Every structure is written in C-alpha cells, then in structure tokens.
Length: 226
Image (cartoon, rainbow, N blue to C red):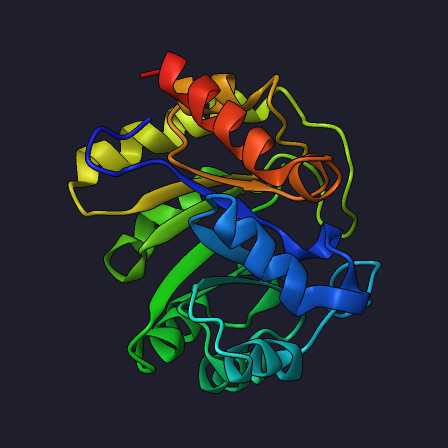
C-alpha cells in the first residue's frame, strides 16, 4: 500500500438497492465510506447494462456531495465522458480497449477539471500505463472480468498490483492504485499488502447487515498490511 495516500473504501452502487438508491448512498457514507463507485455498463463493451449520467445527476440534485468515482465500461467511452463530467463525476476511469486513442480520451477527461484513470482488465498488460502516466490520477486493477457484480477475486491480480505499485513509486506522481472485484473482509489485507490504496467493494458492503461494521472491519484488515 502507498505510504503517501490514506486508504479509501469506495462502495459500488451496482450492489445497492436501486429502489432507494439515494438512501443507500447516504447510508454507506454515514457508515464511513470515502468514495462512491459508479459502475457504468452498456451491454456492448461488457455483457450487462447498468446506469447512465442521469442517475448520477439525480444523486447530485439530492444534495449528495460525495466524491463520485465513475468507472466507464462502455464503448466508445469518449461518447459518455462529457455527459458524466457534466452530471457531477469527480473522477472518470476508462478501459484502453474501449477508446480509439487512450491519450486523447484521458486528455478529454482532464479538460473538465476532474481526475482521470485507466482500468486494466485481468488480461490487459500493465505496459499500457507507461505512456500515459502524466495524465493519470488513478490506475484501477480489475480483479474480476468486468460486467457482473459478485464474482470471485482472481488471486493472480495481486502480482499485477505489486508490479503497478513499483511503477507508480518509480514515477513519483501521486497516482492512486485501486482494486475492484471480489473484494471482501477476508482478502482486502492481501490487496493492501500488494500495493492497493483504494478499495471498491459492492456486495461485501451492500449485502451485509451492518454497513458500518463491515467498513470498520475492512479498515482494520487494511491496517494489518501497513
């Protein structure tokens, strides 16, 4: 885990009860969540369909001012960058495979004055980040294949985290290293030890009986990796 960043927990609304989404988001924030992770799927780049910018805009209109971490699993991602920035995203992450020109798409995000990230699928090589580090605020490692919540963590992604942590530290820029997919109380410490400092969890939090207790336990586990 990076020593320069406070570890952050970002519940994914994909696992929330959408019939009362605003209430769910407020509940996890009150329970100690740092960010809200917004999974956007288009049934094209990934085999599922989730939410669009109007949902994020609605949360903003409901006076929810949390940091919104938007993960675009859409193709072409360039088409929705402007819409999500206008809706209130604080950070937008994109997959290299989902854009025609990665450097240009990251610049498009930064033009809105918000943070930009790159997402690496389990089989995506880490070398892709080497040429765009100057535009990155975050690298997101997918520890499952994108498209569905509730999948099992892929252990090989721990080595990917370690290699990326070395690259980030060598580069010297303040880039967060996020992990998403199958993160639970029993594996979050391993992800932290491998270098992650930002942790997305969906069903592990929204599927628990006590959000605050689960988030507190996650923080305890992260602390053991320090």
